[in-house]
Image 1 (tube, helix red, strand yellow):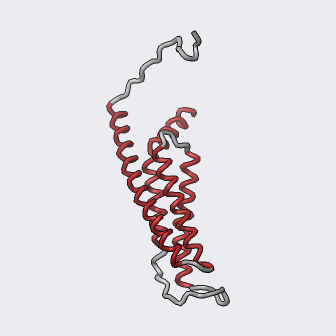
Image 2 (cartoon, rainbow, N blue to C red):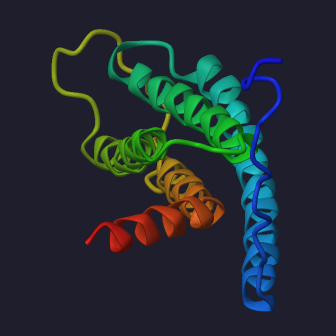
Image 3 (cartoon, one colour):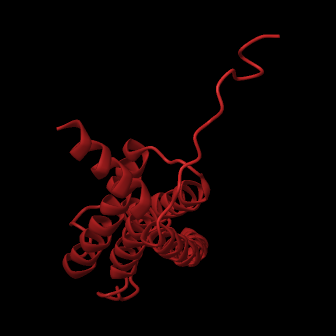
Length: 167
């Protein structure tokens, strides 16, 4: 018999304390809530893609569609990361960076709605630009990033614990 398929030593059971069990239950609750928020953000981002793809069709307006696509991609990444049993910290940080870009895109869109298109910039849409409308992406970015951070509390806690043990 090989030692790979049948271990020669019995594994030592790890006993958890009531505090550990409470922390694990709290982490599960946060992860479920974060997953729910992430699904809502994903659906909302997809609705924004469909909405903006029909209205923002020329010139700098396409940046709104790009931010909506980034928000939807980050929403999908949120759901995947929160559903995976062990997400890497680097992946979590990368998704948080995308959420930050989405949030900043909302602020940039608000500035673009206030300033309007530059002179000589191709066809201009004569419709009024609702100034606070792009801030929906800032809200999506904040909600998506917060959901990811809260949902990954256990991952960051274990990283912090291993970092403390190394010193």
